[in-house]
Image (cartoon, rainbow, N blue to C red):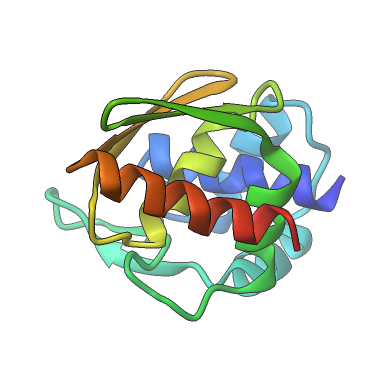
Length: 149
C-alpha cells in the first residue's frame, strides 16, 4: 500500500506542477488513495522530494535528478513495479505492474545513467532511449542487479 502510494506520488509530481501538500493530497484522494496531509508530509520526507521553481516561477515538488544516493523507497518502486525487460537495438523496453510505468520511469530518469537519453512511459510499459547497443546492455545489467537483490 505504502509503496504503491509513493509510486503514485512520484507519478503525480512528474505529470503535474504540484505546489502544496494539500494539492497532492487531493490528487491522491482523486486517484483512490485515502490519505491525510500528515501522511503526504511523511511520504514527501521519506521520498526526499524537494521544491524547485518551475518555468512560471512557482515552487513545485520534484524528485532530485542525478542524486546517486537513492533512498530505499526509489529502489522499492523499481523492484516492486518491474516485471521484465528486453531490448531492440538501442531501445530498452521495460514491462511494469499496471499503473507503475510512470513511477518506474521517473526512478530510472533519476538514476542519471550516462547513456540514457530519456524515458517514455505508458500505463505498464516504458521505452528507454539509450545512446548505443552496448549502453543498453549496461543499463539492463544495472537494472537487473537492482531488481534481483
